[in-house]
Amino acid sequence: MGDKGHGSAVRTWPRGIEVHTGPLRERVPPVTPGSARDNAADFPGRSATARAASLLARQRQYLTDAAERDRALGKPLARVAQEPSLVDPGWTLYTLAPAEVEFWQAAQSRPPARLRYERAADGWQRFRLWS
Image (cartoon, rainbow, N blue to C red; front, side, top):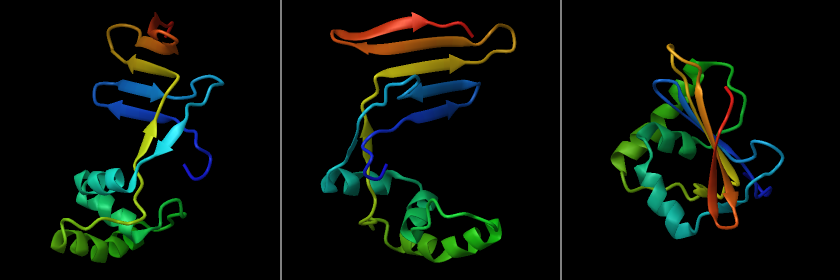
């Protein structure tokens, strides 16, 4: 997220379900970084591999060799196993406040189902979309 303060997210589940959150059109929702307390509380709930990758601090760097990544994760994975309450001080939990959210559900027997929720002054409005 850096210093931009805006973002979006896509979440994919089994059975062809996707949820798109954020700037589906021109609007970009605000993003708020978590407090030190929230960040520390969130980190231990992540998988051991995710915590080790965070401790390795190489996110966003180009990966040319998966075996190199796997070797590099060895030490941080061992550290996470030995210190389960360890928290990466650089870990940040972000909260996304979307202006709209789309749900997509694929199916083999029918066209995909799509719903869009748009934030309104009095709550959320729901719309069905063409596939």
